[in-house]
Image (cartoon, rainbow over all chains, first blue to last red; front, side):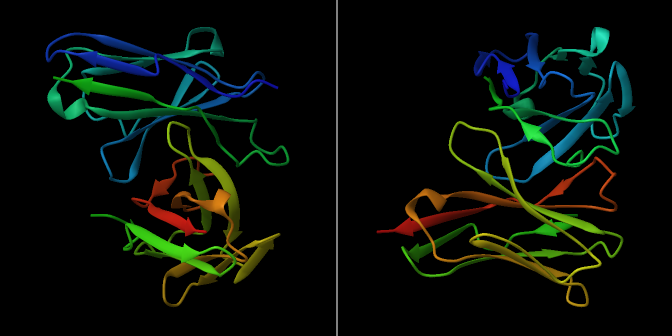
Length: 117
Length: 113
């Protein structure tokens, strides 16, 4: 079974530019999450999709961030325009439908390291 | 205000000995706690969890202890192996079905041969 994949693994952009991160969850996982870790600090929740619907986006820092999950499969996270403080590692995770055995466990992708210069 | 704290940024332990990683939390509504392990260039991997109705959960070499009155949990690894060298994150939620996990900053564990 393929794990959660993320693309790109690393992105370096200039302040003011746009970047789009992609996440492919484990097949069959309805829940998809985005997290961010700023250098050496805690991992912070950004948002949670159930299929194509945003269940909770309370962690999104501001309206420069836009997440989509069209068709309930892969998800994209767009940052436009990027600022210096957006630098960090963006993790995507997925989990099964609530109520299934082991559904609380979130499976993480390797992350995308975003550097804004 | 950080609700989950891992006060030791790093910990060095001799191979074969016990590793003890600590985590403190401030939110008394937290009801479910997890430990994740992370290798460089990889995402966190679930290790072990514990519900607040328990004070101990064991899985092989890994045991998590929960002290609700002290708002403290710890992860014990016995015996420690070189492959255990990684960053360990403590995370918490108000309910197992509450998907929004609140994370600590991580502790880097180094196992010395």
